[in-house]
Image 1: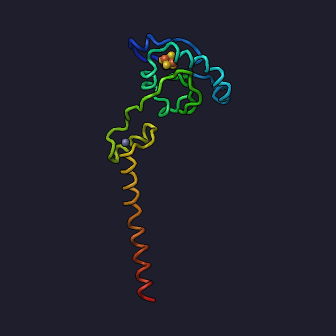
Image 2 (image 1 turned 90 degrees about the vertical axis):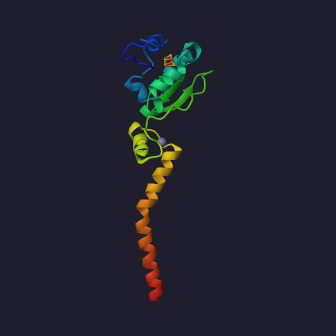
Image 3 (image 1 turned 90 degrees about the horizontal axis):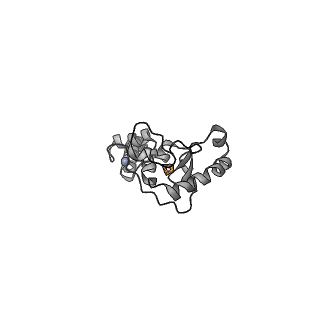
Length: 151
Ligand code: SF4
Ligand SMILES: [Zn+2]
């Protein structure tokens, strides 16, 4: 579900504009089965009549925002797909908004926008973990050597 914040041609033209039900009420969030039942016809409308499915997905970024409701011909709860319309197109991987991937800033950026780490940033995070664990493991090893030499 797109909520316009400023005039934009495609957002003004989405079939769900000003329609209710795309974002759940609190009682539906507490009952996933109610949410899915109420949202199924809406997500099917997306697949059948909306030409902006990819743009909707890019704008809402449901995974990162832990979105609940209908977006891109799917029903989402807490940023995960729980139902998908018949004929819903596959969704492309979204470009990250984390900043510079492959740096410590990228690792922090993924966390900031609520994304899992990409491959490059995972390596950076792992190297940082090994670096911070390094001195402790070196100390342990050298203590072990000393006691072996004393025996
Ligand atoms: S895909 Fe569905 S929720 Fe998204 S803009 Fe189109 S009609 Fe609205
Ligand atoms: Zn990254």
